[in-house]
Length: 114
Image 1 (cartoon, helix red, strand yellow):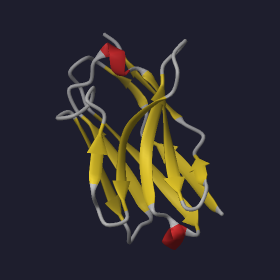
Image 2 (cartoon, one colour; image 1 turned 180 degrees about the vertical axis):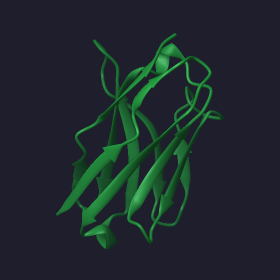
Image 3 (cartoon, rainbow, N blue to C red; image 1 turned 60 degrees about the horizontal axis):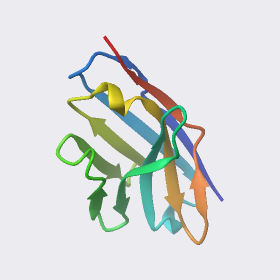
């Protein structure tokens, strides 16, 4: 079992930055990969980025060059540094962890607005 708790969301102006955190508890050693997804109002959930246990990262084209995912294994935490935020980045951001099943956090709201 893995429990995930996100934090760091909020309201930011266009062009601003936010850093999301996802703290994992439970069987962190069994996690193969962790990632971030987002869901905007009225839209389907979409994949944003992920990072493997070995540190390989992957990004959606819409965030490549602006977002950075990283992982602190000592603290069982994954981060998403989001720069140059735009209104279209507004969504609920959820953390996900994959063992032999996929776990989800509760999500954190990110709103980009002037």
